[in-house]
Image 1 (cartoon, one colour):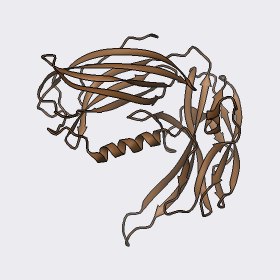
Image 2: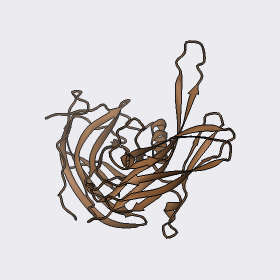
Image 3: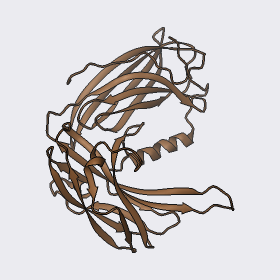
Image 4: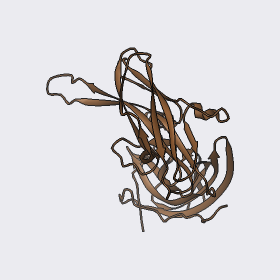
Length: 321
């Protein structure tokens, strides 16, 4: 079956897109204590654990619970207004997932809670604080009994709803959401399973730039980080593309289509073979365990537009390596 995707003969990534990727990576690393600022000054809220484990320094920035199914945990989060004006903040729990370019991202308040976000109950949902004022908010985590082992991640969100006034009468009103998130990581006992699966390759692209979307899935129970390379060959085995890949945190039981931009010369009509080699490590606090995978797939590039159609699947072996 033939497939195609939009492409440009220049094959270069605009600086604007690069900047967007950098911002996405920075936002994805929300595992620390972060701050929400109101537009144009005003209130500025921060979240931080009240209690922490001296043997695990990361717990000064976010919550890490080593516990068991069926347990009820009680803890506290400090909410501080570091801004110059009094303000009201909304507090609520959310689930976490993996962003398209990897890294931890958090779902919205409107998304269904199925993991850590569903286990958390906050002592209050709204606070009004003066500048430099802080308040401790108790919360509990009810760990269900039928639950998979391994690592689970969610977060506690502090949101400042802000209405931006329209420029003229009848203009569209825009709500700006200012968020700060502190992560909540729950570790449950069981045999750790580290498994990164390549599920396929599909064409992508926008604004006349070619991409290959790598279907990746963390089917295990532990967070992973990965690095490796993608090579693309033509039907005469000439190397056309060779790119290094570096993936940030990949949460368990999540899947993404990781974008790889075709550089320099765009791919024309023809048959190609892609080889993906990756090494990944299991993340447990500051320790890691290393695993590797290497898979190859053939695909055809045609001139007929068929956006988002799939190339033949690339599958890796199951089991622990």
